[in-house]
Length: 163
Image (cartoon, rainbow, N blue to C red; front, side):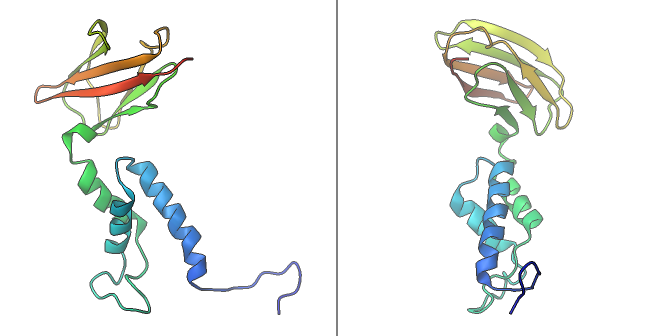
């Protein structure tokens, strides 16, 4: 019996649930393109007993860093995911985050009707970001960001909400 105000140790699977929920939330935040089944699969694959699971210990203790690596292999290697927009939907300004970096990019924002409302040449470095304020005074609606590199053209939809 534990006296009031003291601390005692305990163990059990019920303690693992909040830990795994927290790890899952962190993984989803790090790789927002991932779906629940991919996160669950990455957690299983990262377990210390993944190659020999059993009915008592399952796949073992998951390794969060290994699970993140697995998810990034799936998602960040896709060219369309090497550039992220945050936040989206936007109310004022937003950031373009370059997870991988081309030598140079041309950024253009178009209205839904096709009007060019912003253009900028940019030379990103690894992990760099660019803050865009071009939509701050614009009406709510759908806009398109076109990102041109030497090797590809990416189109990202931006939703502008009321400020």
